[in-house]
Image (tube, rainbow, N blue to C red; front, side, top):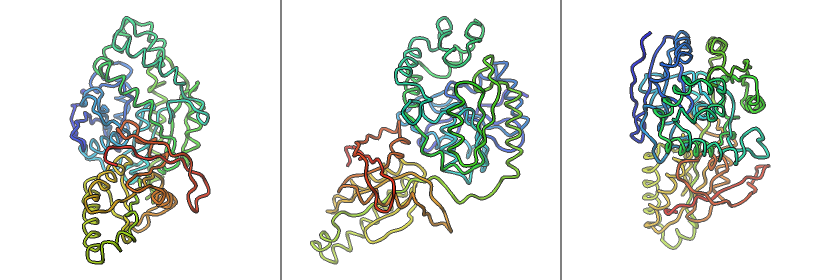
Length: 450
């Protein structure tokens, strides 16, 4: 098999994402770890054999993430939502309507997990290589690195990235200690790094990566899921992740430090992939649950404002308000679910998009002499006959009711999933939501518009 041709898909913001298509069979998207380069990977003997083996199992759609390899270099917005948009662009360009997602490492895994939860109708199954859903250790997640360890990792990037003479300790931290002592292997890794990203881009990428926490979306994944994990220190985190995804299966593989971490025993890796793809044929079913972001808006003090304006002026104001809201919903790919009097309920396929939409609505309606408030939440919703419902919708409505005039209030989940988007939040503490048993940590959006 010849080295595949590199192609480009244009994402929604104009960024060009590099991808290759090779092999035959059901579609499989390969989201590589953040150190990747579509063309150089074929030059590595281990990677080459593994990719050829994968091509015998599926029609593989392999991509370099934005900012990495042959894709456009770093942009300001590289949050998880934006990278999911990149996956959609690649799948659309490759003509893939329903795809097995294979996310490698914590970074590729985050993108594929978010896509699977948000677009189950386009996801045949989710295959993850290792299970790290959070990069910074806390009381509820003791398996991640400490802040000090992450700081040291970034310092090592700044000192050794792409330098074969000093790269050995960094390769050991990446999980290939046996290759760290091989000059030829160090040269291959250094060349890959130099072509994958500059040192500055690598540092930006790592910082955003460290801030991304996608634990909250795991229970909303309702596609067949298997996690491949070599034996070793990463096993407890993977076991926890498997317990959070309904029906997820954990396949343990022997540790193999001779290979890059995402390969570990290529033959066993390929056999597990083959089994997963074959099992999907017996599991295909329409799912009625989807991860969605809900936005609720309403006009503050509407009764008093209507009385002050008079019936005719108020009716005109409401009509203009509705036109403005619907205009921004169209711009940010929001779907109007319901309109009750002066309030809107809409859904979005990403939390940052919902917040940006609310920001612009608040600013645009002020010249009408009205102020609105908004609430945003991301969670699992149920779809029945095109209608969206479930607990996440109730939570979103309750959050909206607690927002202050002219402000946007969001859930902890929204804050966690928008790392890298440029949004800023102010902690408002824990709140009780009417009719909901748990207390919720809520955040106020801080922005020059609101």
